[in-house]
Image 1 (cartoon, rainbow, N blue to C red):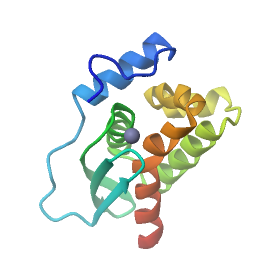
Image 2: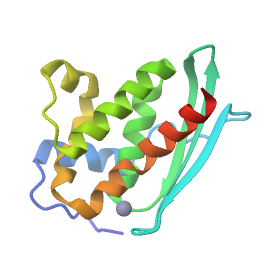
Image 3: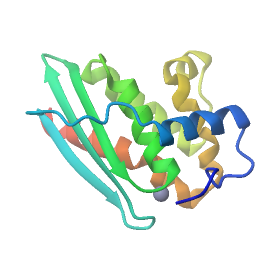
Amino acid sequence: MMGGTSGLGDLDELYESIILDHYRNPRHTDPLDSPDIDVEANNPFCGDEVHIQLDIEGDSVDGVSVSGQGCAISQSSASLLAEMLDGKSTEEAMEIVTLVRRMMRGDELTEEEQDELGDILALEGVKRFPVRIKCALLSWTALEDALQDRA
Ligand code: ZN
């Protein structure tokens, strides 16, 4: 545990408060009864674990459950992913994953792309901490793999 802060001292305060809010109150943690997608991933460098379950109806995400344990970055990132997925099409979800990857790589995003990311932009500051990028991307990579396997 990291005490009262994310341990990322110079992150923007607004962004830090979004991250801590999602860490302390993760969204969509109730497990699904019979998910269409059920994946687990872990980041051995930090000890992070995430478990993602999705109900897929047609081309859309109809139900989301994300849970796990680990550092504030990995767990808030997973919660932001859960919040993003609700009601999205699988195609839209893949687009967001691509944007998150580009953001963490330091690509310049257009205003439209930033709007699409919304609160997920809070993770952007993590790119300055290379060892934490794996934490931030853990759930996104797991989602991407799961959706690709399904296609
Ligand atoms: Zn971590």
